[in-house]
Image 1 (cartoon, rainbow, N blue to C red):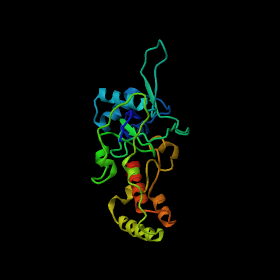
Image 2: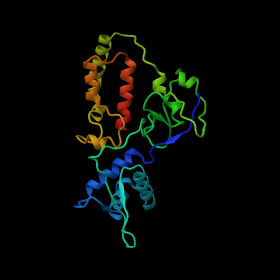
Image 3: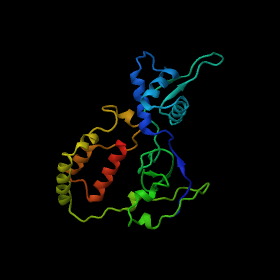
Length: 241
């Protein structure tokens, strides 16, 4: 398998992005833009970071387009201010996710030719099972300037195998989800992201799903193979993380 040029989609950890967004909500300000020292004060406590680490984090989030920085007017002394994006506007979207589908973190990633998923080169081996085609044919990624990506992800290489009828699959999945409802972590997957704020969620979640959507697909008999359900569960975990 030939790997092409790695692409960096985002730089800031999505969990830290949400913590920074939540910090804005803790500030009682009538203005959308918040002075840098005030947001830094909250982040020192909530994230236990030093000032230089906070500056780097804010720079990364701004570079990802997930907060906006307002510099003082030219020629005037003052402190930079930060504000949240206008979540009423749709966030620009490419053909691929922003975060590694295995570890759910940002950085240099390989883009799958056949789907929206991306992976860190170090995460592909972990994502591939011991007998998967991708693991058998895997070699160390290389960089080829000027070439397009030529990479098929582990999920796409695990092609669905129709071993049961749709009716059998529906019964199996209904039983499985009934058992899962008894688990403490079940509630974690009911609500993904910010409740009722679809456009805000779209700034962090590339392809949305939740348990309600999965249960609806099970009820409607839309899964033709168990692997299809497994792919949706992996997506759900990715969205929550």
